[in-house]
Length: 417
Image (cartoon, rainbow, N blue to C red):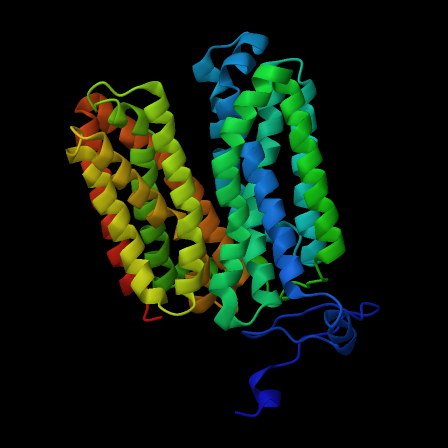
């Protein structure tokens, strides 16, 4: 097919000679942007997004590692202090699909930078918060920043790299999430003991400022598609493929969090397990998650449909393994490693799937998927707790494993990719 017919040129904004505009599967880059591209690798832009994800996810996880000192300083219970994490998920549900609608004409580079700046403000307010309500309000801002950034990152990376490299690009972005998952809690715990919890949030400010600087240096200008945002969001949500994808995310991520939220009581069923052994299990999961992201990014570009089915099935098998193999620490550790390996690739695989099924509507599709991830976190944790209280941890793990495996079947049937 003649390339001039395959790609419809997007409108060129007056006075902006280097803006990428998207009106089809691939962006049209005006000559000035092409010239700039010879000196700026798109992978530097991908790296800037990865550092941004790291800074945001690090800030999201910090309260979990600093729960006791925060609660003592603020004069609240640890359960109440833990709602600082819940608050980010609640605002994320709302922000993910709507942040692009609120600023339909804003250069997406500056939108990402603005969201990172919002995270800086949030962390700074938490660091000086005189009371718990002020801290909680600041965490609501962080929820907007995290969900909005993640939703927009998918659309932006779709403009930066060819469709055949989306798996590797999303893997690179999600390296930031994997590193934050592995490092944020232990580093936050250690520094909180040495310096106190408030300086740890000032450190989060510094990390987010570095991320903001890299975004301004390395991200090219990226213009929105120009479609009516709300109408496009509704149309995207009404497609059968997207509805199946959203259901699959709810089942897979919900099943994962229904089990992983309660992995400690699950592991404590192992006879004579010690605190160091429990810490080692969580380390195994974190390292396996990192490796799973690397493997999934490579496979997503080659065997997307296979890994859409295989990863959730392995989560289900591993979760059920933790449920039924409680007599052996070695088998539990093996199951936890398989679990981390399988779940580590899920964000990259899902983002690649979105780029295949909705290449012309990456912003609304990414927003919907990100919002559903936040719903899955809340629903999964709540459902797991109810099953644990009503029955026992083994029932909770078995139901969670079946849900995750069912999500893989739904994903694989959503569309041939």
